[in-house]
Image (tube, rainbow, N blue to C red; front, side):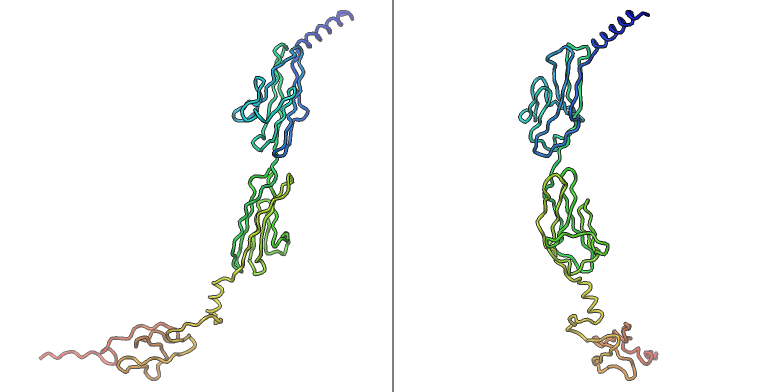
Length: 304
């Protein structure tokens, strides 16, 4: 094959390649990040072979494909807050609902391969919202207590900080509480009177200014169980005002029983209620035998 024939073959192949050239579609930014309520620019650029007026369409991908721009008009929710320049679309005042993947399609009917497309991902960031805080009004000294904080709207997810009397709480190895910045919890292993105060939680995610819930007071009270236990151990609690006073170590003088029967000499002290001994040296006694059964057997009647 001489040089002339080789050149002619190459020119023919090049011509065939050009005739098969497709419409090209591209973007200058395949991933767009925008803050809530700001504008988002979705770039789309195209080049056609012959068709000077190609058809441009925008769709939002998902379970159900939604048209954004079709037949020269913006559709549905985009009708009053979007504009187009060439094939580049600008969405105004975007919200989290606008996040997703958008597709720019260009159809050039006069071209040999008429369709070209490109995808652009939009991620709308949401600044922190005022978190909801769960702070107990009362905690019991010596017991555990938990405080919780949550912001369900911020994107990316918020991290949390706790404040007591407007002073930040920090995690320390020797602290009697634990903090979880991701879950927003503040947990006390054992509450003391020094933990009483005003608490608040602050959420932040680096998108906007941090937001804090209103401060709430947490009081610390003594455990009722501890007070009762102290009185049982001989504490300074109120004494019972009625009835006989006795303990296992003390002996109370018995009352006279009906019929003049009282405590027999030499018997241990007992507490009598209505003539019935019920407590002797801290031991519960059985009821006394019926009359006639003490000291001698009941006489049997004589049969004549």
